[in-house]
Length: 242
Image 1 (cartoon, rainbow, N blue to C red):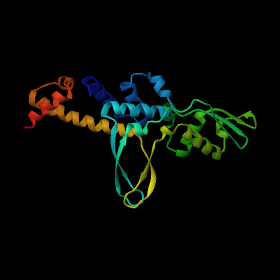
Image 2 (image 1 turned 45 degrees about the horizontal axis):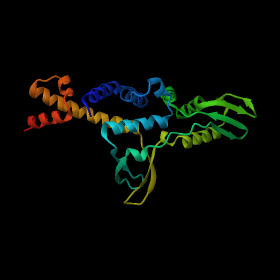
Image 3 (image 1 turned 45 degrees about the vertical axis):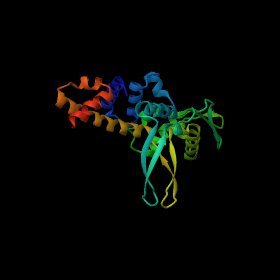
Image 4 (image 1 turned 60 degrees about the vertical axis):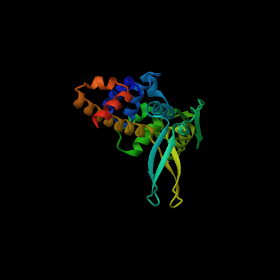
């Protein structure tokens, strides 16, 4: 990791501290993935957002990812060795998403970060689901007549959720796991935004420890220490710890 990227990442870490999960994901992409504007990043379908987070993780820390999972049947801890390439999926098709069921014709769009930001303050899960569904409705017809999304029955909302999930599988990444102890098989959710944030938190704490040691030993400023390459910084740290 170059000195410039490290400095930007540290600034992003500081900005993310008091943010929600959705806000953090956007902040990291806005500050570290400069190919797209913030407006564009906010409007990306969640699968594409997660794809960019996976690519960002690879640029910052490499392609291999280690994680743990607990078997829900016997509580055995599984050590997972993941690779970014195994989790990357092609972008969803741009074909219209249309649900035709029980006399309704519902045209949908994929949810994005703006939708998650809108519902993040809703404490009631059902209200959040219905609000998200309504926001993703482009057009709702009942017997050929326009109706508001709030009139759609629950069974159709569930069908719409299934349609959206199938159209953008990278929006909700799941790992197919098998317990070596009890042979139980299950799907475990993998949240790349949360995983990357935890890695950045751990990285920042290690960096602060390094800065603290070098500043005490040599009287250097934080800016001076961050400007060093990781290799040079490590050489000085080895001498301090002798």
